[in-house]
Length: 89
Image (tube, rainbow, N blue to C red; front, side):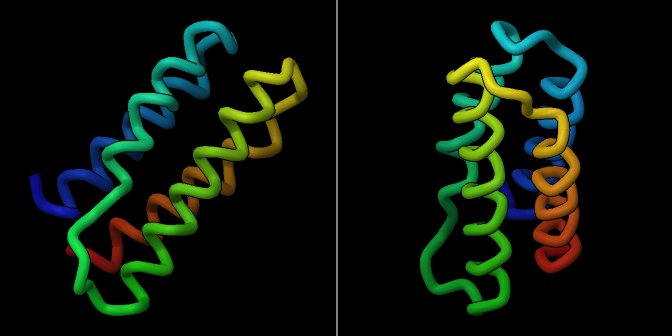
């Protein structure tokens, strides 16, 4: 799977997870973590964008796992993924 395809998959999964209750959203997010790990040797801008996606997904998952409000964390995670997707086209 190319980085562009991976970013698109993650973006759709985030949008799906956002609509789900926390017990259903958390496994979706946990499944994304492995996808965010990419090929080494990418340009620094792409690596930074990918890293931002990883961190944003982790923040949402952490909040859901702890039973904390996560509503405000979805938009940054989606925006980070869209930025990454735009860089790897």
